[in-house]
Image (tube, one colour):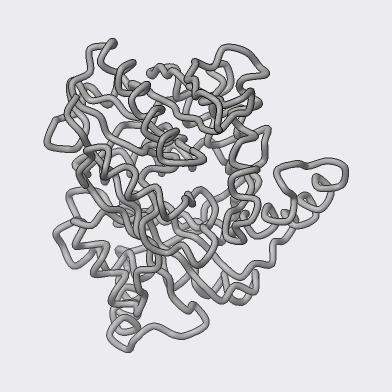
Length: 384
């Protein structure tokens, strides 16, 4: 007979290590799960190492049975999310949970109950999940696309989690999608004509970023991002501590020719960030850079040769979003990065997203270049 189940908060370094280690056991037979670097996973849940905690607080829980960790969850409150308009997803009284893993439905349900009670005790009246932990990290539960590995900074999950969440009283709040495409093929003729028209327009410049001016270029992109995305569901502005963390994390996989800024009359108005899929080398390291993983990763980073390139972020300033210029700039940036990805990095596949299910502009751009939905992530909600 199985022993009794206990749920307790994470309190020590040993607890945090157990929290990080659990997925390595639960997913060891899942060929499509990509083990994260354990050091980065620990940093995510350590307040001193994660700038998100400058405006958020969290309580981590472990589930144990007979001395063995069998589940985990994070309950958290983002003070900036509380200040957002309620019709944009967050808003007053809305907490979140994420980083959920469990051996079985009983463990899952008990962990959800613990997270919900902590949020009630903090005055929350509504909960969204899974969001792990910031909306800018890994939001949503994978509900379609279990048959292939996620790209860098995207999540994976067990198929049964969906039923467990829905039986716990959660309702769908928002879907996020990723699109994939064969980037070895030229885009349809209509897209090529739009690109050529843009190239003839003397007002338009699409340039590579300059990594030697990393902070300056990052500030330009952030300014466009916070404007372009400010009306989107789930938007929470990035703060300086988070921007610093993102810079440290992404700088090694930032390449000038894979990030473009579009200018109109000399003013930056759009950007597109593309990253080589770091999950491809990480999948072979089993979460550790020792003994020789660090050398392999450094060698790969010198000039990555990858199958997949991911576009995690793209934005056009709001004043242009309803114009034809917005899609023209997007197509130009996508095409220039597509060429570089194929000729310089050996990539054959692209992934765009995530894209909100109601973002018709971005979905139209993705569909026009003959891409298709390959993964769907669901964010759920529940009244507390």
